[in-house]
Image (tube, rainbow, N blue to C red):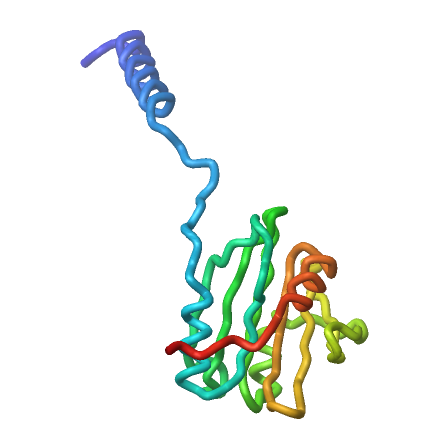
Amino acid sequence: MGSSANMMRSLLVVLALVAGLIALVPRVDSVRQPPVDAASVVSYAVKDSGTPFSFPAGLPMGWSATSARYAVSTDSLPTWQAGWTTPGGQFVGLRQTINATPAWVSAGMNQAKVTGTVELSGRTWEVSTDERNQVFLVSASAADRITTVVSGTGGMEDVRFFIDKLTPAKPAS
């Protein structure tokens, strides 16, 4: 059996080795994912569904698409959705479908509470915010039956700017 002093010396050697390993191993302080080709996803969605989904044309440098997909969503509705990071590191998301149900709209709004309406780009948008102050704008077009949900973590300024850039996407050739 060893003495208490020898056990303490052994413990100190082991702790010194662990501290050295921790100091030597590089750690990532942020994760950057490569940009996503959201334009090709929406082009496919337009071609596949015949629906004139929207896409933000002409976003300036610093805006980067981080996710994009066209898939069946809540209530089996085919949904085009994508997300972008802003130059300020915030998030703006877009979600669209035809003939949206209340459950589909609710699923895209993170249980946000309606706070009013606003006119943007010739459409009336219902404005909602959640407990984390994320902003959600919802608009349903009677002409093409498309419901659009735009959300943002950076406040109304980013969302307004994004909505002003939305234009009908072109189908894939």
